[in-house]
Amino acid sequence: RIRSNPKFQAFVSKRNKFSVIMSILMIIAYYGYILLIAFNKPFLATKLSPGAVTSIGIPMGVGVILFTIVLTWIYVRRANTEFDTEAEAIIKEAQK
Image (cartoon, rainbow, N blue to C red; front, side):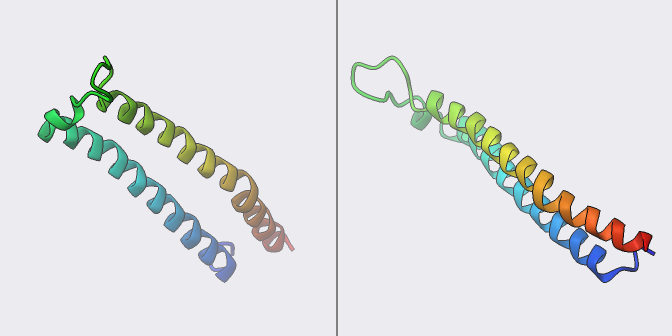
């Protein structure tokens, strides 16, 4: 009964689209960084300033990690609010 409900089908479609978008963003961030490491080492080895010890690669790596944390927070926040609320409403409707 739930699977045939148009609201459930729309919910699953919306949730899947959101998950795919988040996954694509993560893939771009991770593989983009790895591809830079593999194919453009001189760029990543560029020092932040003439006397600096740190190269551009370090803050970029930290940025990938922070990006992961932010994307995870966004996903969890939306899942715990919007998606859970919609799922509960669909279940309640099906139990009637």
